[in-house]
Amino acid sequence: MKTALLIKEWTATVERWRCNKKKIGFVPTMGALHEGHVSLIRTARQECDKVVVSIFVNPKQFGPNEDFEAYPRDLKKDSKLLINEKVDLLVVPTVDEMYPPGFGVDISVDESLTQTLCGLSRPDHFNGVATVVTKLLNITKAHRAYFGQKDYQQSIVIKRLASDLNSGTDIVVCPTVREQDGLAKSSRNAYLSESERLAAPTIYQALKLAEGMLQVGERNPQDLIDAVRKCLNNEPLFEVEYIAAKNAETLEDLKILDGNILVAVAVKLGQARLIDNVVIEVGAGS
Ligand code: AMP
Picture (cartoon, rainbow, N blue to C red):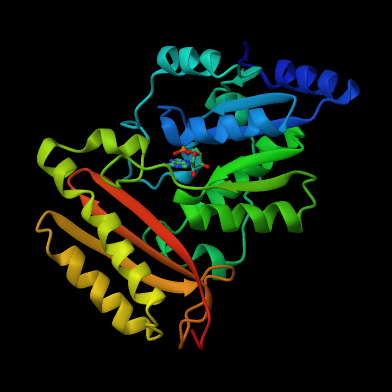
């Protein structure tokens, strides 16, 4: 596996692959890799000739009181995992390399997508994500880029920016990988204490409850949200940030749950802020 720290090395490698008609798959990450990341890499490996993984903890997507400094970083361990997965190129740019002095662009995506759900408590987060992902896509010129459903709102924001800015990269969204007890794998699970870790699977149980309710005909969003809240409130360690049931494409609120429904939650648990979601297709008459 080749590792590039500089954008010019990264560009030179992908240009060569492009000239040789190689299909390039790209998996952007912030490192502290786990099986969720691995599933994206394996999908890219199956679908593409060359796989590029980036590790960059992007300061622009962290708020002033968030965990940018504390975010887990272990490049040695990550590199080993990526070698095992037969990744072709790992790119690890520094903050200065990505945002040199004088950097003056901030990509802003439609507020209907960015100022709802996680954007309510993290107002600059998705524009920070959009800015870095635009840059990463421009440099990598991949045919496909892989993202996880776990960060559902992020995947919608990125699909919009890739489409509206004609990035030339197809955005592929892969299913959420979970622990055996249902907790979505996340680099931030490392922040959980033993008792918090035991409580955490209740998040997925609450989402499964919502899924079950939708499957047996619940169409009232407030009743669904109330039931999810009741389930989450059983867990005294949880501080619920939001529970939402929305149109899964537009992220709009619905009067009647019909079509492709996103049920999403965010919960503070000790030092960790955990998010998770399910997407369920329902028909008004079913
Ligand atoms: P991160 O390193 O947290 O920025 O995540 C990098 C990519 O991995 C994003 O597209 C995430 O949505 C995806 N990802 C993170 N956790 C999971 C998971 N449990 N299952 C699937 N994809 C995930």
